[in-house]
Amino acid sequence: MNPQAKLIFIISLLLGTTITISSNHWVMAWTGLEINTLAILPLISKSHHPRAIEAATKYFLVQAAASTLVLFSSMTNAWFTGQWDITQMTHPTSSLILTAAISMKLGLAPFHFWFPEVLQGSPLMTGLLLSTVMKFPPITLLYMTSQSLNPMLLTTLAILSVALGGWMGLNQTQTRKIMAFSSIAHLGWMAIILIYYPKLTLLNFYLYAMMTAAVFLTLNSMKVLKLSTLMTAWTKAPSLSTILLLTLLSLAGLPPLTGFLPKWLIIQELTKQDMAPAAIIISLLSLLGLFFYLRLAYCATITLPPHTTNHMKQWHTNKPVNPSIAVLTTLSIMLLPISPMLATII
Image (cartoon, rainbow, N blue to C red; front, side, top):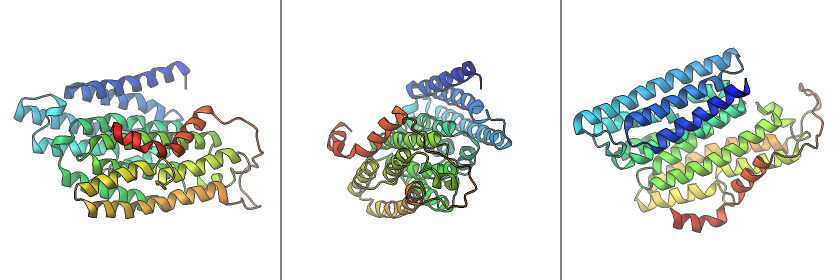
């Protein structure tokens, strides 16, 4: 892709995100979401592979439908209350439609079917944008309307997302699809706490985006698209494979690592809100996710490739690790000790 074109698309992405997160009026928020959608489409389909074109088409159709629903819910709310302000979404029907629309935009279950397919058809770096940057504006809209959303509906969507994200990720062999189901499961954790403690949703999103960025950058650096390639990557880049192991365990939410922090705070807050059954269910369902993270980690570091390999031999290179990977991994592993400070901030 032409560097100037790529620059324009990335600037448009930043512009669309900024417009949405800084707007008070629904039409401005909708405009930002549309700019975002149009800017990411060429980045998805830039390889001109039929699967990439298919992914871009699916993404466009789903996002267009979701944007229409966002506009429809805001117009319905304005019709009944006379308010176009995002924080004044008080009409219950409008809130339900908005929840469905944002769930479609994010890929929350049961509106998640498009997300693994689109991620599988995209390049790794576009997949990173789809999993992190593109989810920020819709989450911001949910954050701003959190006081008027339906708690029962969001809790149901959240538990369903964690369950489906775990179950459907179990038998995947493609790393991008595994990361897509991981994203769906993490969105469930963000959705369940949104009404009770919105700032915790944002903290969870920031930490999730950081850990996912570390994983995607590592996979991109090793050029790994499926598990069989990952098995032969140890000889090529042992340091990167070790980094990937730690970051995946952090994404799984194992205690000494950063990923445990949001899960711990969310379970604590749910218990305070007399939602111990929901906390127990979501914790048990996250064990499904732990299984496929452990499988990825096992493939990255513990398996030795068989002697009869179908892949081209990969020789060890002394190429230095990308500094951004080093910084993101360090943060993904070592932020747990500062959790008291984070707890006082939020």
